Each structure stands twice: as C-alpha cells, then as structure tokens.
Length: 390
Ligand code: FAD
Ligand code: PHB
Image (cartoon, rainbow, N blue to C red; front, side):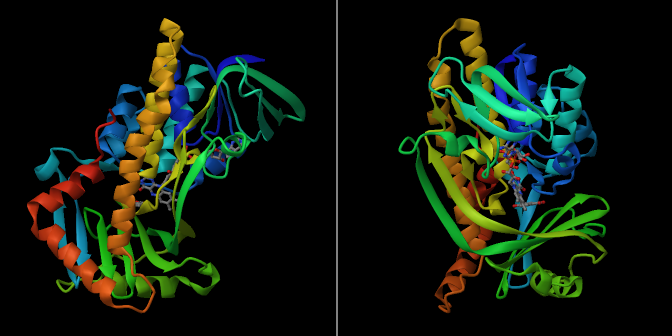
C-alpha cells in the first residue's frame, strides 16, 4: 500500500492534519491504536484559542463548534476569597471558546469519514522504518493481517507515549523536561455551571479550577499530590475540597451534582528538539507537553499541524523543501512561548509543598499585581487567547 502522508495517531493533531491535507488534495492514511469510542469519550482539554476555532471553521469542521461552543470573553483569577476578572476582549480584542476536545475529535472523525479517505482504528504493533530514505514505511497489524504502508512522509501525531519519537535514533533529539511535584484531580459533574466564565483559584490548600463543558455539565480540577491515590477520594471528599478552595466571600461557589467521571493528570513540561528527522515530522504531544494550567496543549497541536500542512502542500506544489525544512524551527518558537506561559501560570497558581511560606506570599503579591495592572493583565490575556501562529 502507498500513500503520500502516513499519519500515526488520531488525536486532534493527526485528525486535523488529515483534514487540512485533504483540502489541499493530498492523500493520507490515519492509523490509531485505540477504538473510535475510546478516542471520542476521552475527556481532556476544553479551551480553544480563537486561532484554533478560526482554523476549524476555515477547514470545514467548525459547524457544530460555531453552534455549540461557548464563547468566553474573559476568565477570573481568584485568591483570598475574591474573584478578579481578566477581560480578554477588552484587552486583546480576542476571545476563547469552551468546547470539549472529545467533541473536536468527534467532528474531525465525522469529517474524515465524509471524505472517504482511510482512518483505521484499533491497529496493532505500529512501527516506523527507513526513516532516512525517500520512502519511509509504517508497518502495522489490522484485522489479523500484516500491512506495510509506503509513504512520502510520516507524521508522528501519536502523543507523548507514542512510538514515533522513540523510533528516532539516539543522539538526534535533545529533550528538555520539568516534572512538577503535584497533579490535578479532575471531575466532570452533572451540574449547571455556576459561573459563565472559568475561575482559576489559588487557595492556601492549593490550586482549584472551575470550568465547564455545556450548560448542564461542570468540569472541575483540584491540585493534589503527584502520586495521589484516586481511591482515597470519594465524591464527598472531592466536593468538600473543591468548595473549600473555590467558595468566595461574596457567596459564589460551584454547583454540586453527580460525578460523571474522575481522573488524575500528572503535570509535566517537555520539549524535544528538533521536531523532525528526515521525512518523519513530530506534531502535538508527541513533541511537547505543557502543564494544563495555560490550556495550551490542544492549541499547540493544532498550530503544529497547520505549519506542517503548509510545508507539505508547498513541497508537493513546488517540489521545494524550504518550508518543510523550517517546520521544526517555526514550531519551536511558538512552542517555547507556550511553555513559558504554561510554566508561569502553573508556578503562580499552585502551592509548593516545601514548608516555606515565602512562595505563597509572593504568589499572592503576583496575583494582586496582575489583577490590578492593565499592562500585566494584557500580557496574561494575549498569551491565554493565543499568540499569532506566524
Ligand atoms: P493525543 O490527543 O494524545 O493523540 C495521540 C493519539 O495517538 C491518541 O489517540 C493515541 O491513542 C494514539 N496513539 C498513541 N500511540 C499510538 C501508536 N503506537 N499507534 C497508533 N496510534 C497511537 N490542552 C488545551 O489546549 N487546553 C486545555 O484546556 C487542556 N486541558 C487538558 C486537561 C487535561 C486533563 C489533559 C490530560 C490535557 C489537557 N490538554 C489541554 C492537553 C491536550 O489534551 C493535549 O495536548 C492534546 O490531546 C494533544 O493532541 P495530540 O493529537 O498531539 O495527542
Ligand atoms: C478544561 O475545561 O478542561 C480546562 C480548562 C482550562 C485549563 C485546563 C483545562 O487550563
């Protein structure tokens, strides 16, 4: 079997890449090791930058997003029992949209199906070969048979735990990493959102985040230990802790309801350089991870594949490789700015458990400064709504 671009992974990066390539008339095969149901039900990100929304609409996959996505014109930063609004539209002219990553993935899968181009779920034993040749190959098993896909290019969109990045020979990539000594315990609850906008809170007992998925579903997170045992968190304990950290002096607190789903997410900053090895290109979480406090992961995955699709289209149209050769450098400039922002938001909003009260006082001063200085608030806002893609 032959294709122009072999795409490993049907997360936001792989599926979005497949869609944009389709619009350029470039064929691809998408290979995913999980089932369609698993991919669609996996609850993850929720915040889309305006650039991500615009790209989805331009790419013909934004119809339901435009209808059901919740446009948010600001967020709240909460500390010492009070909320302070950051007015994104007033400060930057841009907004964000709250729309679940699983909805994005669902829309992209539906769009892929409509093109009739191949998307294979539950493939096994995926491996990549001949990466430094002009015809790199992907081998995999599906339906009990061995397959070999001969490609012009391979896109490694297989997330942090995928096989593409580790298939690059040792010594080629440099990894930069920071692992944080805490994690997030997240729940999805059947409860109407009590606020129209997100609330990021720093409390003496740790960070908490109020978010949402729909007019009937609230999404909440609280800072917990890096090795936290979910078994030790019955629903009542989760709600008690969330209310303690999120209840404000003016009486605001999240609405409580049945817990639909819960899980723990580790916190890591990670980048590999370069994001390319001959004809293998890494995109999204396969190349970089950010802690979720800045809501950047999905958006970075989308901006990577936009740049990759431009490079590939340019190469097929002109026979020239200059744009493709710049892929890694162009992505990394944006990736590192998102890394900086995500690290900064994380450091500002989480308790460091080292027994020294200095940092908490400093963090409160930082939040006080941010929420009272237009210049500081504008800096937060322009990063949160998304820096220009190029
Ligand atoms: P993934 O979504 O990980 O997709 C990779 C795909 O490859 C998966 O479907 C996987 O099954 C498949 N795969 C893996 N290995 C193989 C293989 N060997 N063969 C075939 N397929 C393979 N980001 C934001 O922008 N905003 C947010 O608000 C936000 N909140 C988050 C909250 C949480 C709790 C978490 C966990 C993450 C959050 N993120 C957020 C990050 C965001 O979810 C990721 O950055 C995003 O999923 C990256 O997309 P991706 O396509 O690169 O990788
Ligand atoms: C979410 O709604 O899941 C969400 C929102 C903001 C973040 C992270 C996650 O920073």
